[in-house]
Length: 268
Image 1: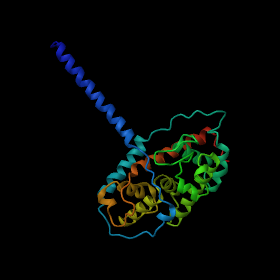
Image 2: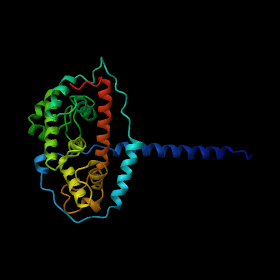
Image 3: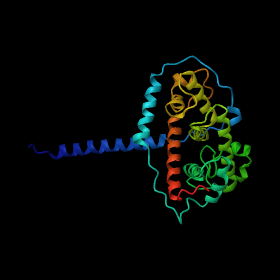
Image 4: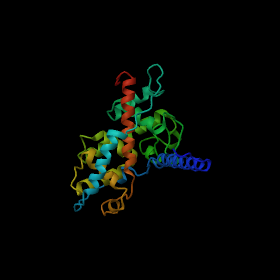
């Protein structure tokens, strides 16, 4: 075997270090890019008549659908183990139980939304201006009875947040959304209802089922990152990174399962 010289060893070490550095930068960049989209468009502004449009090439939609299926099967991030104290999910469990009735959800699902949004920190705000446990934008919160001065109040924030979720459900039912209503509602809470309406219109125009989330409207929401699609005349709100919303929904539902089990499956 040929003996490796000192200079060759140094060069090899430098190459390996470079490869490891590039890989690390890539991971960090991926985490940095995965930033939640938050657009302040009220449900009233977004609630417009869906328009019809000619069909479109579905090859790219199938590619995205396959990517989504792979993500669900292999790449979903499992919720980190959440430490409970005396069986409680958070200091706000009683509020989640009470106001979850507003939307008719299991209280642990509302808790999961709050945890993903704020990690149960009631006094934080995002760079985009969202505030409190449910990370509500001030104008949206005011519409549901919570002025800016009360956004850091846990009860007022949860009350407004669940009122928003209930309103999203009502509006989506008008579009004949029923089977996957929770998925659509979480998507609307995260992305804004206008982007979801765009995706529903696109699904209807491209021959997909506009009332189903998986492999249909979810795919179209992700197509809104492509100029070939977000520049279509019936796409009202333009470009959007739908992959972030899909990841958000999976994360919320993952924590909901964990919280439900940790609380002993107590609904009320």
